[in-house]
Structures are given as C-alpha cells and as structure tokens.
Image 1 (cartoon, rainbow, N blue to C red):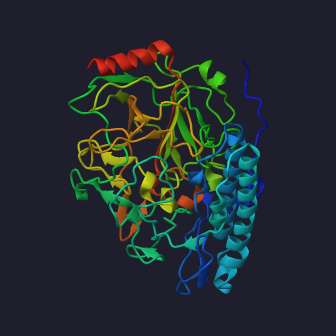
Image 2: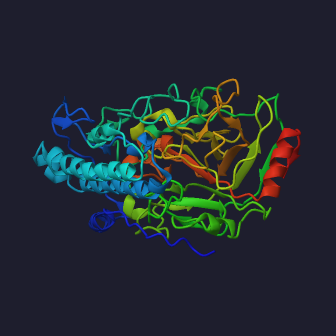
Image 3: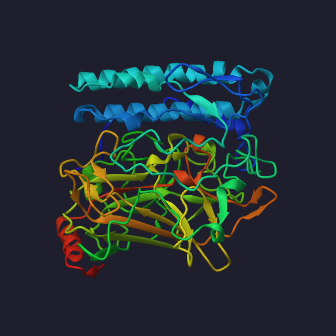
Length: 510
C-alpha cells in the first residue's frame, strides 16, 4: 500500500514563527535574550496572581501539558486530538519567540508580558482546548471538564524547575527527585554572571550550571525510579542486540510520528533515526512495514529515534534556517553517535511475552524542564565512569573519555493497546523489585546506549565555551533533563519470537 493520505497539518503558528525567526536570526542562531518580567503574573489554571519582584527576568514560558491529561479519547478522535495538541505546542513556540524578541518593550512596561504575550496565549489555548473537548465528545468519549484550567501559562526564570510531581503520571512511576541545583543563580545570572538563557552564542542554553564534572557525581547516585533496568540475575536473563548503525544514511527530521502524526515539524527539534528509513509524520503502519531498514537483521524494521546532540561551535548545519533547527534555537554541528547500542533484555520476575507489532513507546519527557521530572528518564555519564549517572546535568568528561546517553524503556505492557491517548498509559516501568503493575505483562526491555566523541566544553567564571546540548523545544532551554527516546516495534513475527526465546532461555543473541 502507498503513503498515508491524511491531510497534512501545518501548525498554526508556523508562519508567524518563521517570520519572527527571520527577524531574529543572526550569528548562527536566534538571539534569545534575557527577558523582563512583570511584577505580577497570572499562574496556572487557578486565576490567582502570583506576585514576583519587579525586575525578575522571565526566561521562558511554562504551560501545563494538556497532552499528559489525555485519557478517554476514542480511537476515531485520536488523530484530530493529536493535531490539536501539536497546535498547542506551536502556540507556545510562537509566544516564546515573541518573548525572545521584545526585550526592549518588556523593559519599558512591567505588564507587557502579561498583556501582550501570556494573555493572548491563554485565549488561543482556550480555543484549542475547547476544540479538543468537542472532538472527544463527538466521538463518543467524555472530555475532562478540567482541561479548561490548563489554558493559562506563566513566565518564569530559568532557575525555577518544576517539582518532582510533574504534570503527567502517565502510567510511569514518578521520580522522587533528581540531583538538584541544576539551575543556579537568582533567575538573572548563573554562576558569576552568565545569563541563564544565553551562553554567549545567541541561543537559550545550555549554560554553565547545566554541566558537571563527572568526578563530582557520586557513584550510584541516580535516584529516579523511572527507567529502572528490568533485567537481573533471576527471571529471564538473556539478551538480544540489534545493530542498526549510527544514522549513516543521514535521516533527520523534526517530525514525531508517535506524538504528532500528520503534523509537519511536530517535534520542534531534529531527530536522529536508525532502523526504519521511512519515518516521518506522515508514515502509515504499512509504510513502516514495507520500508528499508538500516538494521543488519532485515527482519527488524523498527524505528529508533532520539533528539540529536549538537556542538554549539558556530557550524551552519543543513537545518540552520529551518523550523526544528536554527529557526527554533537548535544550532551548531550535529554530532552522530560513535556507537549506538540497542539491546533488549528480560525480566527479573520471569519470562517475557512478545511485543505486538507497531507498539509505540515514548520514554523520557521532552518538556521535563517545565513539566517536572515525573517522566524524566534518560541519564548522562562518561565512559569509564558509568557507575555515575546524572539526569539533570551534562557531564564534563576527562581526556580519553566519551559522553554516554543511556535510556531504559518501559518494559510492561497492558496486553491490549499499541498506543494510548497520552502515549504513555499502555506501558509502564517495573517497580524496584522488577514487578509490573497489576494487569500488565513483561515485554523485552529496550535499553539504548549512545556514545559520543565530544570535545569537553570549557567552563570558567560562570561561562561555558563550545557547549554541547540536546535539541529541544525552544522554551525548554536545551536542559539535559529534557532528553527522551522513541521506539516503534516493526520486527517481523519470526524475529520477535527469536528475541523472546533468546531472552527467556538465557541466551545472548544478535
């Protein structure tokens, strides 16, 4: 069968964003300056004013994540709802870029942010949220009346990361906190004076306080329950490793087939892809099943993708002027992994069952900086120091050591659905004893380990030179806690059965 013929959705804010970006583009990226906050800002859905000292700097826009609240969405409304959620993301991008290019007006008017940015954003969000509720109800579902409370956003300094309860429980175990101190300073300057949202090359982050010497990370200190390794000495102890390369085919785009199907630039940041070679926002399951694959085992047409890492060294990449790239603050040289290990492991509590074909899993949260760390997952380390893992910092590795990104996916499946309304509740993590929640079955756990050769950034006097950073939504300021990973299972039946047999029989297979 041919390509998906669903109508392309272009985010409503795309043209406006491009116009703002064109005005602000210069010196290899957008000029993301510090921002002047009003003395009073409307907060959240309660409608109460929160007083903030005049002269505080508004570094970013913080909006409740409507998508995490999605539960009862009938299947026939899913596509429309996902499209509307992507529009909400574009509205935030538009508002953030307006925030970034109106510093002078903000400095002259303490109410500018409220009146010219947050107020109109709230009204636009309310229209889309009402539309989401209508689409759910029309399809026979029952929309959450409380969604209206999520229309209001707030501006806040970069040093105010949301608490550990986050916005979404999503069937994942909420973390009990990451290493804190991720954003220092008082919301105006980090360290000895570096602006919290400008590292000196014209983009919003990362800043010096986003980095840590790996020697300063305590061994075995990562305390989030998310992403626990499901395997151990007991149960199903085998492994299956699939070799799909490191994106030698240069397959990049800023789409997200899982979270924003049918939406161009639904991710607002660029992804690396390995495995399936027909993964964009408009790929149908038939497209995926019939696509080429970069995996050595041609029975594995699964798609594995993650946001690219970039070295902010002034390089003009192919997407330097594009949405998802430089036009949304994602600048610099794209760094391909030197190694991409994709390994499936078993369960400490017994056998695993086969994953269903086209099962979709998102792990981590691209909006963790504003959502909170409840769904944060990926961790950072250095080769030779992998007993030291950190979630909310980029590591500074010693000479001869490489940067490592590690992600353990959810390994429990509800036994029925290949996706869910919020793209989370059909899967779950094991608990500390390796048990799945009631009603869930253990499936092979995907563990992704990415290794990079990166020149170690120099951090002196609160300034960071030539930093590296994960691509992110513009308002997430390139924080390391926003790292995430995506997977769609497109293994053929024979290969999936081999994976299960290897794991359950304690074999190590490739």
